Length: 339
Image 1 (cartoon, rainbow, N blue to C red):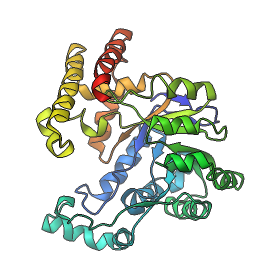
Image 2: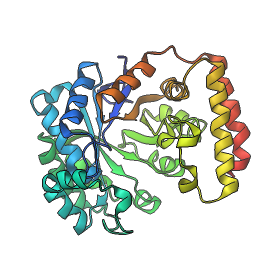
Image 3: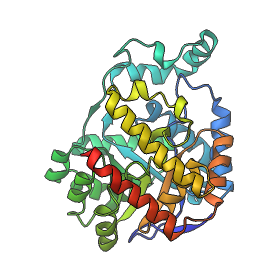
């Protein structure tokens, strides 16, 4: 494993980060023990950065991290998020998960079987009072008395413009509840707003072959400000890890013309991967890892097999300058179609 400085902070993080969004869940076919073993194995292999949220699997993701690392807290960097509020139905599910999980497995029920709206709609709250209360709940689930990084979870631009979130986060930092705070952004425009605030230590952004929008704008500006960057969705939500006929684009993109454009775009990068004699997923990960200014690249993991696959891609040779240039040129070709 290789390590990098986390912006202007005193944190040193592994280049590869463990994305914890898929840990737990009622409809999960992977046994909890396997997910726990994946966490422990990741740390054994040198991964130190673990990114979760209080809303991932109704808090179960945080709880699993707490179970894995409560006795070796100093060995890991834990980043969590705040902002989404669970509806009452999801809160109830979180309390009865141990009872529901075996029933769901036995009956073969999947998330697709649920009627629309059955789990309730998510809302957001970034008020000072909510932030203060939410961090205490996260700390209990994580079995720790501090977070290394606390991030706003996809806040709207209006929330970022107001700056009202700064006071509670700065208080939590003074109180030792959090070491640093950042923002997990939905858009590059949101990231630009965040760079106005010197106390924000990190930004989390999408970065993949299919979304390079941050590279010419946010990445250089963040480096100038000493702001750490966390790259997420380097596999574009799985679009760069599966065969084209297994992507299910019909359900993801209703418009036939947009669907065909996306298929052609993926094919163009698949050809570049073939020319480089690499799997497309390896090309995707190495592209994110090789981006100057990125402190850590997150990959979603829930099994030891997935961990091994990602570590193999991580250990592959970095992209050459010409390979990176070809990827950037291909992105430029698709920009007119993206509008």
